Length: 302
Image (tube, rainbow, N blue to C red; front, side, top):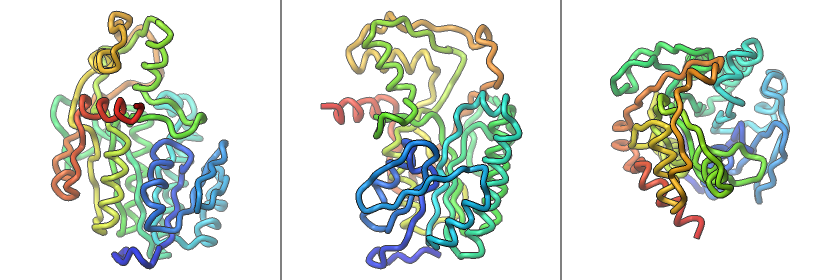
């Protein structure tokens, strides 16, 4: 159990602290916790935090870091390079997503630490329904299979939170962070480039501030179990890109729809619709629609 006395300033380790989610989590949690974070290639300097470079394939390195820090909370939010990379680098992907996560889960269980794990909508199949937390996963790509393996590993620690999400977006916190679909689309629109987007890919885009706020609140409430933290709009990439262009008053005629089949990508996309009723009810945090999220981004920029 996590103490509710914020004055104790418990130690929290963010694995993947250089990414958009991890960095935002650090910003949200550092007022109440002593923060340590890990990064892979790009060092992150945030006031009042300690950063550690780790290789996620080196299980012993990670567990020794856990022994050194002895965190009360571990947030494992390290992001994969891409869905397609999992299909082409299966051994590495399995090692990082499943075996490393199992090592973290087993160590945090021994340390009586809370473990928060960021998962994905890709654990479910392309079935036309809204999936809830208690539905049975059935991934169709290797990324989803690996993340499901990670979920099963995390469950070895009874004090766990599994957070399934989808297409996180928001402004980059550092230059090194991978650009979200919104930011990359805006960059192309600003350069008057034709943008080809897959109109057969559907998502529930999730505003990073909502995702992180909900995780923070679940930790504060000392919740355990699985939650779907997604935005409140289900739409395809063409619709999404058009909304981005219109919201930021750019030329939406530059956005063209294509079918993903012509790209011959390694991984099949699942087009999963994750319901977010549970997390909104229990945290009282509104998971914004795409219009609301884009409004918030536009206001942040000004």
